[in-house]
Figure 1 (tube, rainbow, N blue to C red):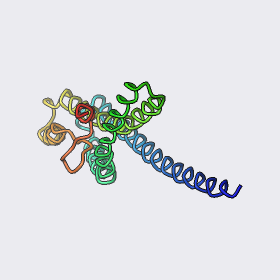
Figure 2: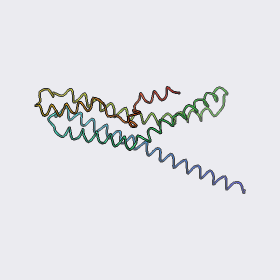
Figure 3: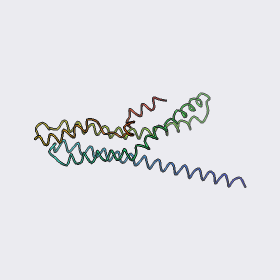
Figure 4: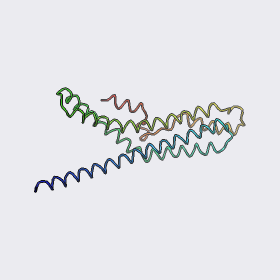
Length: 194
């Protein structure tokens, strides 16, 4: 009976620490997905306004500038944590090696390792999918601004739309200090390492 209480206290501490870590991680992931969907929706609205109102609408340029600043702030806020997420996926290689050994030895812990591999893949996938969504919407914004009838406009309006087209030729992406761009090609490159 004396050994039961320290064991119970240790288990409660581990469960509390694990629950706290999971809540923080899930909160970060949900926040990242929500911000991504919000920016994607703003970019779609901007595309629609360009296609329906044309380049004469002055609010288009203001909203584009605001979205560009929002993506830059998103990068400043999340990029360090996203970079750490990519670096920590090296743990995946260890899980993969342990899984192959467990399957080879017909060990029952193989199912636990499959769960850990799926868990370690899901984090980078969500992050890179969010970056890919923003990148695709910025590319579609460039297509919308190019396909509007800018050539029929006055020179001042042309200059404004040219500026926007020039800014969107090099897509504004979710990245870590311009070192790593978080998109699905980054995800596949990270997984090819293993």
